[in-house]
Length: 155
Image (cartoon, rainbow, N blue to C red; front, side, top):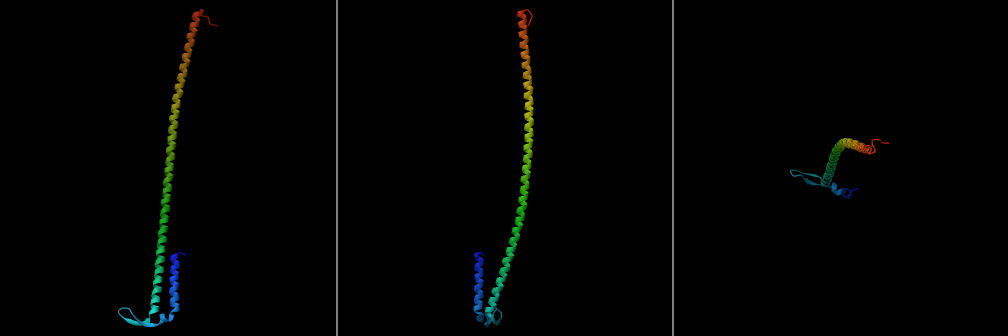
């Protein structure tokens, strides 16, 4: 139990013990004034009854307050759960958007790389063909020079 509950229980037990030990005094009749009129009644029982009534109202107030707090907490919990689900959905959509963006970037980079490879390949083929032509031209020149020196016969 919490300290407040223990203290409240001790006070209630003290009131009950005082009422039990002093029951004759509580039930003794006396003149009681309520402002406009006066009547004879046991003042101790009136005070004990009012204290009990106050305790009942206090307990009802505490229970209603606790109930409203529990309902409010429950409502807040539901709202927080809804907000959490909304945030999770937003985060999932951001991840999906990021994935599609990265895939588009990948496709674009792959297309650019393939285009560059095609250009390099065509350039390399042109250079190889140019090199072949140059080599053939050198070979033709060498053959001509050899024909010119040997009189036109090549073995």
